Each structure stands twice: as structure tokens, then as C-alpha cells.
Image (cartoon, rainbow, N blue to C red; front, side, top):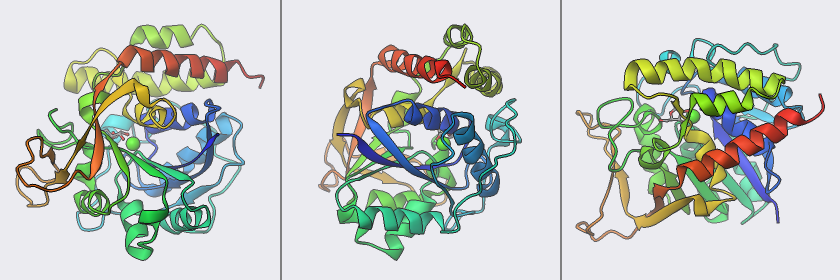
Length: 315
Ligand code: BDR
Ligand code: CA
């Protein structure tokens, strides 16, 4: 049975790749996108979401603008990682379609409550929209089918501070609300995403197909690769968000542990850091399933095959 997916996203280079992967995957039905601040402003991320959907001939999928700033912290965007436009060096035509009028967090509530037990939420940006939705309508916690979250760094170092990962650092208070909500969460932290590197050779394989999709992927990831080379000495780029999306229909790509995970809100050097109680020192029950092992090349093969399929569709 195809899964009903809602993507909560901050497009974003790897977010855009996750949108394309969702569109190329027959196991799931992408029912809508809610956009949140993060890699780009919410306004720019919304334009990017609409443009990427149009690029893949999927402009029928509705896009909802969500929260523009974190719950408590000042805003933090990431132009150095994703470019001033949020999609690296890629340039997409201005979208012909517009976002829906409903707010992103209200869309999440409406979707989940209208299909109890059926909606899978995939969160690949800061968790502000989801936390807002929980505060407004707490019954979504029992009515969502499952929640996949790209965020955190458990045993891995941070990518935004030495300790914290971007999505949890940008809105740690929202992450705290969602982590402790009781929702059935699967977390994809940097521990697994940093093993999933899209290599220059992977890009060369895609570029054997001449299409607007492969051109977009090339122009977007060229910027992302330059960032990874300059700041992290990685040859290629880490595609966090598509891995998280892939786990919704191919969970066997990762190995998991049920753990109690929390996020630091104390405001010091570890603000936004996620940590797990591996030895049950707090006696608190597990609040999520955490991906801690991954088969990176199996994932990359899936990603490449799906991008090739999308690129070969007649224009
Ligand atoms: C996360 O932050 C963003 O840079 C990516 O889109 C991903 O969601 C990785 O820390
Ligand atoms: Ca993201």
C-alpha cells in the first residue's frame, strides 16, 4: 500500500533532492509540503519548493508556507551552505503556481486529523512547524502514523557548532517539544547521514543523461560539494534529507536502536546538542528509534537509480 507522506522542509539543496526522490518513488504518495525557515527564509524556501515541483512536473502537489522564525531563538539561515538562493548554483524559472493560503502547521493538523493513523510525516528542517502543530492540536500525536526526522548528532560531532546539528540547533525548543511529544519517531542523525556521501563520480553517472533534472542536480550539488570541501574536507556532499525520506519505504537501509534522546536547551556551548541515554542512567523510557548504522552505497544506488528514472521521463 502506498504511504501518504507530508514533507516538512526548508529547501535547501538536499531538501530539493529529497523532494525529487519522493516524486520518483512509487512506494509513497507525496500529498503536500509544508515549508519552514532554516536553510533559507520561509519565503524563499517556498519558491524553491514550488520550482522544484514544477521542474519534476508535479506542480499539482500543494505547498504551504509555515513558520518564519524559531520558537525562541533568533533566526539562523544557511546561505554559506546552500547558496543565496538556497539551491546552490542552480537557477530555476520563477514558479507558475502559488502556495496555498493555509498556514503550514494548520495543514499538518488538517491532514493528520482527517486521515487518522495514515499520514507519515517526514521532517527535514528545523521542527518549528511540527511543534506549533502539536501545541495547537495535541491530538495529532496519537493520530499521526509515524514521524521521520532528519536531525541531531548522537555520537557524531555537530555540523553547526562543534556539538550541535543544524536542524536541532536552529530551533532546539521545537525539537524538545517534538521529541517529548509521544509521537512515534525515527531519527536520522548525522551519525548515519555523514556516511552517505554523493560523490563526484555519482554526479558524473547522472550527467550521462541530458535532462533538466540532472542539470539541476549538478548545479545545486556543485555548490554543496564546494562547501563540504572548503569547510569539512569532504570530497562530495552529504545528502542528509534524501536518506531520511528513503527510510519511509526502505527501512532496511539502516540499523536502529530504541533510545531515550533529549536536546540541550541550557544555552551554553552544547545548546541544541542531542544526546542519548545508552546505559539507561535516567531510567526514562525510549522516546524514539534512532538510526545508528547505515548501508551507504545501497542508499546511494537507490538514489541514483531513482534520479535516472526521473531524468528519463519524457519532458
Ligand atoms: C540538515 O541541515 C541542512 O543543512 C540540511 O538540509 C539537513 O536537513 C543537516 O544538518
Ligand atoms: Ca533540510
